[in-house]
Length: 104
Image 1 (tube, rainbow, N blue to C red):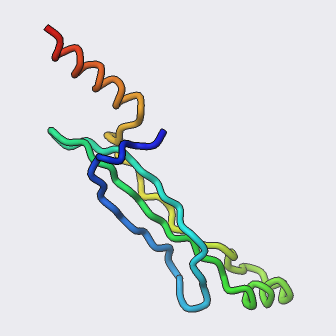
Image 2 (image 1 turned 120 degrees about the horizontal axis):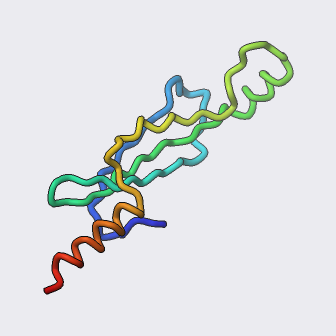
């Protein structure tokens, strides 16, 4: 379920380790997590660029048959989850609770 567009977003880009000129960016993985601070909800948008080993280097690895070859695609791991991150169930529960409090 996509998070509401009107929520403020804090963007964090996490690059994988070991990226140099032998790698080419092929896309990105985007994760959005709802965070709660007293009196505020915001979205933590985590962007993890995805890189592929340049094609000529991939071919050289395949033909050499060397052990311990690097993977042809790299992406940084997601950071550890905060136990207080909210999912859709939490949001609905809070919305219902707030609505009940506002009723006479």
